[in-house]
Image (cartoon, rainbow, N blue to C red; front, side, top):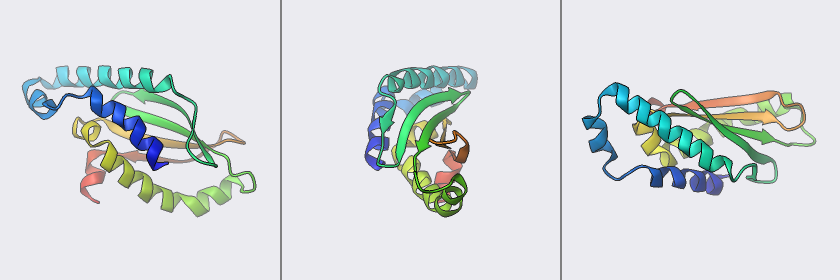
Length: 143
């Protein structure tokens, strides 16, 4: 999962120039928000061309979308023998820590630009939401 996540966000890092912090200081807040929304939309458009993508034996990245200044990655978990309730109970805490750390490491530029990242996990069988992890720049400071 880490490899695909890093690959996905590598594209995002190339879309942002090295002088990004300098440009942030130069742009008025309204223009910065508009620019960030444009970058998010371009990122979603590009990454969507490669989806769906198998992450591992149990997980598939089915789509990426956005809402305002949040990138939303939608995954499906296929644990054939486990119920949705068992997945929620047994895997949520472990996954939350791993996902948060991974996002903080690989999406720093997005987070620094006030773009939030959300990972939404659905059951492949029932399409029910299993869990959702929302990560902001503040979450990374607290690690």
